[in-house]
Image 1 (tube, one colour):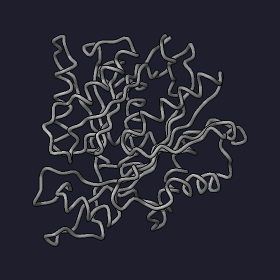
Image 2 (cartoon, rainbow, N blue to C red):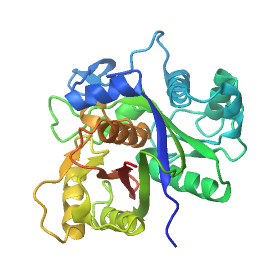
Image 3 (spheres, one colour):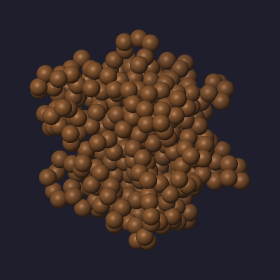
Length: 341
């Protein structure tokens, strides 16, 4: 049985290079970046650079996550009367529970605060997905299940995350994972929020999610095991299987890769295990180059970039592979295609 195809209806995005989806996606397309000095220094006394979201007030912690999330949700649902929002489930993607320095209250208080800030109560089917960068895959699967059993329904998937807290930065520094003058094999931390509205496919121009795959990578980044790319390859194969496509039919890729050699190597290994027909050129886009390593925010950012590029026709072709990985070994892949009627 073919899986239900989800249509991407609208997106919202709040990032260091733009406070709306059109602004952020235009900046990412142009390769713009906006790193600034944080209040923290590394072991050599150098200021840690990061992609902070500029807001009208100096919020931090959960207060900033709240403002970013509500802004993204309001943009995403802007075409729907506010009184209709109560019938829409909200799937909220947040940092994984194992994240060092994880902001308190993400599993309970943040969701309630979002509802209070928006003055709306989302549908009872709402839930929290604490899986970091791969949360978008689980969220789309849950949205698909809900829409399949509730014809005519819509689901909004939101994500908010930040790595710009000292406990998190201190742990990343101790593991030599941050990009600093003394370490080129690292990433620049970031933050942001995004939202995407999905529903069942309809007969008009639309961006469709054709397949979703998930898997586990035993040789995750801290395991010390030799990396073969098996987990990501399995996730990609599962997504391709649902979409009834082969890897050579994919036009380009968008990933959550943010600078570490491990994840670039994994993407290359996975591709070598999946691509069986010679293909001349398969672009790989990584929005984190412009907005930094944003944790759970990365997944929705990839969807927003895919949506903008395919609707505005500046992508290499209509079919794209998105894939993401977290440090615990979870892997997810999604196949999207823009179809015109």
